[in-house]
Image (cartoon, rainbow, N blue to C red; front, side, top):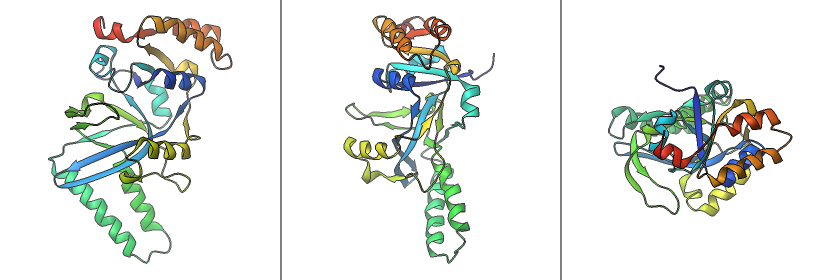
Length: 250
């Protein structure tokens, strides 16, 4: 048996899952904090996140970001440009040196007289790496919920879809501009047209909170007639799992 599964899961709330099934994934800004020694970077990045977990491993993670979810093939993920996150220890020299190196690179670019833009392009390509780095362990901070200290982010085995750095969207947003939910909502509106598409056949599992949610989900799939054929709905109906099942049986 391979170490990693062939499915990636995305967890969210009920309305968000229905919206994904209606159309597709829409990127939104996620607040990130990367600490390396005494160095720290806080920012927000537009993305869609997934977990590279087996069904038997979901019970350790389901509920952290929502009790509704969708599982899609890893083949789809790779072809769509998703990439695994690289986890970095707060105490490692690598993390501290990388953050410091980016800061110094930025200073050099600002001081340069490169009219061709080559230095800026090289800096952006280096900075892009930061969008795929997360601390191995740290504080899990979620709006309206108690902070979880020493949360092991690496247990999520996260993959991300992150739009390419461009002039059309803010690829990095300073944390002070997205501290409140109202600020974050304003930035999400700016990227509401940036999407991550999938086909119905890419779906392998759907997850709902409880048994009473199953029929509602099937009815919703039937209402989205232009996306889900009767054959696809029949297939997905047999692949709906509940939060309780995963907690107690898987």
